[in-house]
Each structure stands twice: as C-alpha cells, then as structure tokens.
Image (tube, rainbow, N blue to C red; front, side, top):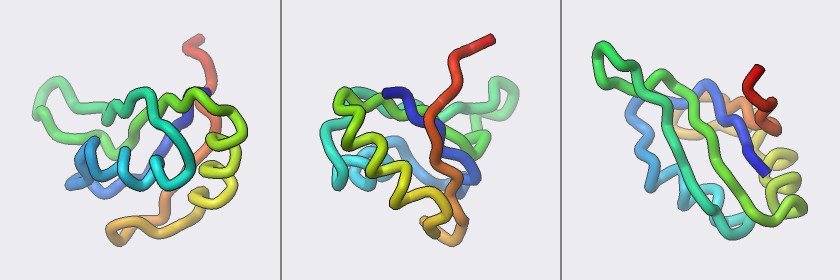
Length: 81
C-alpha cells in the first residue's frame, strides 16, 4: 500500500520516517518530496508498505499524531491523476 504522510517537520529525514513506520511492519520505500528549486523538503512523503493490514494500522494510529512538533496527516495515497 502507498501511504501519504503530510504536515511533516522540514527537518525530518527519510531514515527517521522509515524507523517510525517500521514499528508497524516492513517498509518497502520512503520518499520525502523535495522542492526542485531549493532542495528543501516540501513537508510531505510517500511510504510504500507491502502488508496492507500493517499499513492500515499505521494509518489509524499515526494520523493526527505529533512527530517532531507537527501533527502528521497520514492516509492512503491516491493514484496520480
């Protein structure tokens, strides 16, 4: 399952986010979206998890949770239009 994680602190690194998600199950990939112009984080990421049940649990428990001073938005990612 592909998961959208928004409202991230701009200092969050992919490795840190992967550790948080691995509490719920195996993580296939973590991609923090960066601004092309500045090279800084845009404050959101996409995380791929193979186990849908683990992904659902992560979404249920992390949506609205505070991480590094920000309240995360965690939900299933919608396919690109």
